[in-house]
Image (cartoon, rainbow, N blue to C red; front, top):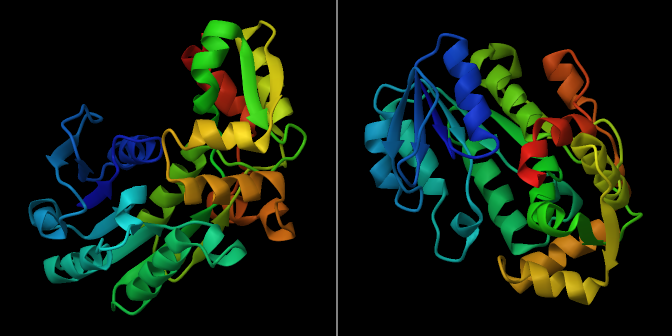
Length: 279
């Protein structure tokens, strides 16, 4: 049996579906009651209370570990989740980390994630670490303005990074959970090309079949909007990356192809599959 945390999100849902379709028993874990793919068992648990995972982990052979941002806050204990996995007899853990642990290692959340990576390495479990860059699904921040005004408002309109489709992260995670050859692997996951916010707006317009205007925000305007849903420190970190990506953050990684035997999907594919969110 395989346990998937964050099972109702952009990565966890397609991962749960892929594992169920592969004929594996899956326990889907989320904080709240939710529908899960046919064949999966759902367990409500809060990763902020690792002991509460015991019922989900009982009899599990593998765990996909995805942490929400609040689990990196001061006082959180995500390393205890690894301890619960060891105690339950789990054999393999695939951890969703972040590319930032190597490109911008000084931030609080990246320090915490790197420490969790180290805890996993030292746990005695089989492990694989996934380090994605920016997500294509972050474009859903624009869904309301596209629906109501047909406009994408974002800073740094002509500065891009190789964002990745969450469905590709899920596909890589499924392979790492199911195949022994990925044990000990650390995979950096990006999309196939650098794409700017202006070009993302064009791709959304193409998916909708109607024009979408791009409006460039100042950094201060963008930070004001972002701090409505995230801490100011995280907003500044995100804007630093979006405005001045490093060479490592601009690199298109070969790792999706290495794991899946195919190229990662371009942003236009994500936009086409998610066009309903912008209508």
